[in-house]
Length: 355
Image (cartoon, rainbow, N blue to C red; front, side):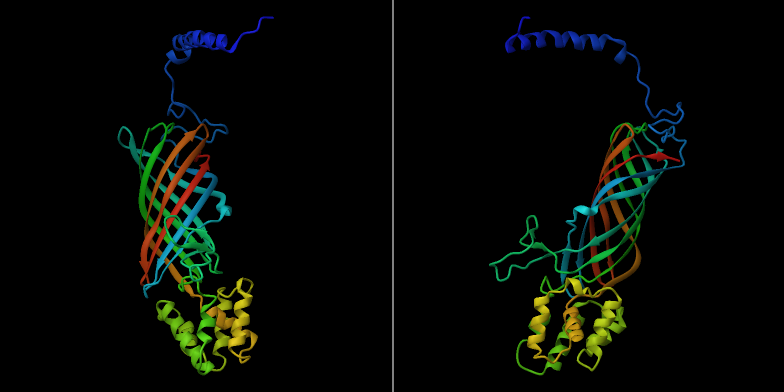
């Protein structure tokens, strides 16, 4: 059997490839007109007959898998600012959006309604904390001297949106689409963010350092925490306890009150901080008072549900029965003198089901 050298094989390829391409281009495969897969003349189609002809569906379910990253930036009334980026890989989960039928007006554009509902749970903060510039903790934040740390705080909530989407794309839904939407969102959130720029664990220890009566130190610390927490009138019970923190029983009541609201997580407390509080208090605080004092440094942050404006930009490409989508958006609004900005990025893979 004859063997061919690599140079001979290359020469044969240059000779045969043009002939093969010519045969394909002259054959009936591409010479016949192609019919759009989503033509209004066809019945239901798709791998499981989940698609309907254009204009015959009432709405479409978009179930699939989605990775969503939420970045939250809060500006407090007292000038403090915090940033809580989402670095959790576990944010990949099942989801389902709902969209209306397309209202295609021009040659390549139209509108539809999009409904989205998702939860967020942020457990890390971006802080500027390097322990005197010698030891930096956490992961870097791009183009910033800040670092992302887990300081025992949490912000969680839910965002529900219904937005009219203006899109550019073909009517047959076979090629890419680019869309931009603006509409109302219902936002609910609560948590215990740290407006001390990462020093929430050290704050109660620093408050006890120095001369003076322990009751005076605790009162001053309660007043500072009250100012830091934003608008005092949003929680009258919290305001009363912080304003009279050294009064008999108030420190214990504050800890129990925060625990009942889910803001006191003993498992995330720094044991070394609790030991230092006990030492600087010279044994004058019982265990419950020590836990309560350590919790004073965290904010009690809870905003009522509110309807705000959100925007959403997306780019999607269908591939047979599956659609790939990249989206970016979120609400930006003011509430109780706080300025809140969400930056949500989602990477989604879903199968449209026409109803």
